[in-house]
Length: 157
Length: 157
Length: 82
Length: 82
Image (cartoon, rainbow over all chains, first blue to last red; front, side, top):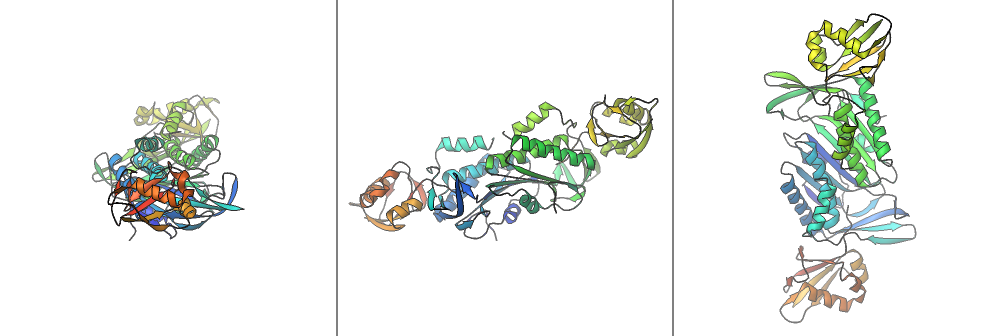
């Protein structure tokens, strides 16, 4: 039994996630997969390790699903993020959205990845030739209306 | 050996398509699947039959890939469309785009489905309780700059 | 000169066939001339006058595009893939 | 009163540990008070003063949020999932 949100050390399965958002009357499924890149900021990356504050990360993912439901009531969204060591080319995050028409599926998927990067307590530890570094992106604040508006803008919604 | 574009009576495989657009240095893969809906225009649909002018449809898909390459040079895009009879819930079209960063993958995927609906000679024959109907959408004109601009707008690009 | 005409979807159904030969008088003709011949033979196609797209030898073409003996000329109703 | 503090990612590495107990004087305290205690013990955390987010019992909280005896207070450096 796969759930709509997950923080897991297991290999992610985009097909299972896409099935999860299927529904009668849905005509569109959009899927996003984030893949570990072999370079970042000009450096050769050897692998990554993702760390999460798991109970809060799950709640933050649930919050994103609620925000999506408020904005696109006909869409169904699922988000899984992996933790622990990941090799180059492996999927770190998978998001799937199903909806009656394509506009909502695209928007909900894009919005979800933007919000994930803003408010989900997960950290990327980069291992490259000659060292390691914690990547630090956004200061998480789920109530920041400006951040949410920026995610909507990127979702073209 | 799967090719980047296909018009095929076979069941579509989103996973194979996603693999096709993978590349070293890519951090994002976006996939869109169009699914046969059980209703349309207030009618209960029993199944669909897609007809294509296959040689021109393949050229039109190749044209969309070239337009994507011009606009998002770092993205790799693949598009497969199915023909013949399709049951409710089956995939009629699958589009996948891989790119270094997510913005191009999302934009190229959305642009491709919009352009497909504008310029690819494929027709949907709808079978519903009590009759059949050919769905007719856009008058295909690949050189219509207004249509292309509308596809870009929907791709939020 | 003679061309092969291909019709799809509802156009095919209205004409009752998807492939047919079409004789055009003289040596020079355009896609528009072929369409005129076609509508003369199948008046049910006439309402598609403005909505139809055309292709010559599986490349999109204009009404004014020339057609040569042996060409395949296709008429396409508004598309609905996806 | 005593709370459990949780640190993640670079904060965890700077402190050398991810879990620790923190005594706050008196019965009433806020997240900000816990942070002050923490920085007093691990000055290397001070540069994160403005960038850190906080949570109480695995719910996002503000610096001004109250904390009670036995609470779990987490400090989160800027996130980088995805």
